[in-house]
Amino acid sequence: MTAHRQLALAPAMAEALARWLDTEAATRDRSDHTITAYRADVSAFLMFLGEYRGEPALPGKLGDLKTADMRAFAAAERGRGLGARSLARRQSAVRSFLRWIADREGLDLSPALAARSPKYARSLPRPLAPVQARDVIAMAGEGHDTPWVAARDAAVLTLLYGSGLRISEALALDGRDWPMGEALRVRGKGGKERQVPVLPVAREAIADYLRLSPHPFAADLPLFRGVRGGRLAIRVMDAAMERARHSLGLPPTATPHALRHSFATHLLSAGGDLRTIQELLGHARLSTTQVYTGVDDAHLMAVYRAAHPRSGG
Image (cartoon, rainbow, N blue to C red; front, side):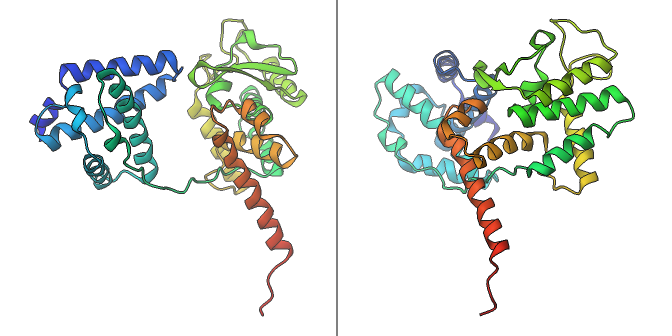
C-alpha cells in the first residue's frame, strides 16, 4: 500500500494539480483555506486512483474514468469514516478538477462527472435569542478580573453581534480601522471586501476598551490586543465565550460564531431582505444565506407549538 501511495502522484499529475490550484486562486479568488482543502481533496482522489489501479494516475489516462471508479472512491472514503457532508465537498472539488483537466487534455469525462454526490441534511445554524446575545455580552464584560480585558471581550462580542463579522475578521482589524463611522469595510474570505454596519453601542464598547487598554494605539498595530500586546487570538475569545455560556447555562453551540448567526437571523426576523443579508455576511452564494430562512421558520413553529399545544384527543 505504501508503494502505491508513492506512485499515486506522478510528476505530470502533480504539475497539473498545481496549475489547477493556481487557476482557482487567480481566477476564482479562492481563499488560502479553500485552496488547501482542494489540494487535500483532489490529492486523496488521485492517491486512491493510484492504489485502485496499481499504477500512477496520469492526466491522459483520466479519460477512461468510469462512474464505477467514482463510486469506488466514495465507498473507500466512507469506509475511512468520512461523513456525507465532507464526502460531498470532496467529490465537488474532484469534479471541478476533472472538468478543468478535461478541457485542458481534450478528454470526455462525462461518465465520471455523472456520478452523484451523497445527500445530506444541512444542519441549521444555532443562533442565540436576542436576550441571550445581550446577556452573553454583558457577562463577558464582567467575566475577567482585569477591567480592560473584560471591556475588550465585550467590545469584540458586541461587534460580532452588531455587524455580523466572523471572529477572524474582527480580530484582523488594525488601529487604522478606528475611529469607525456608521459602516466599516472588512476583508473576508477570499480577500473580498464588504461594508458592514457599526452600531453606536459597538463604537461605544470599542471606545471604552481603548480607553482602558494599557497598550499603545497606532494605525499599524492590532486593534484588539492580547494581554502581552500581540494580536488577540481566536482561542482567547472562545474561552471568554465559554465562561459566559457556562455562567448563563447556554448550550455548547453558543460560540462567537453563533453571534454572527444571531445577527443574520434577527435581521431576517425583522423583515430584512435576503440579498441584503447576503451582502452583509459576505456570502458568495445566496443559497448559503437562505439557510437562515430555515432557522426563522423553525423558530416560528416552536412559538406556534408553545402557544397552541395539541390536546390529548
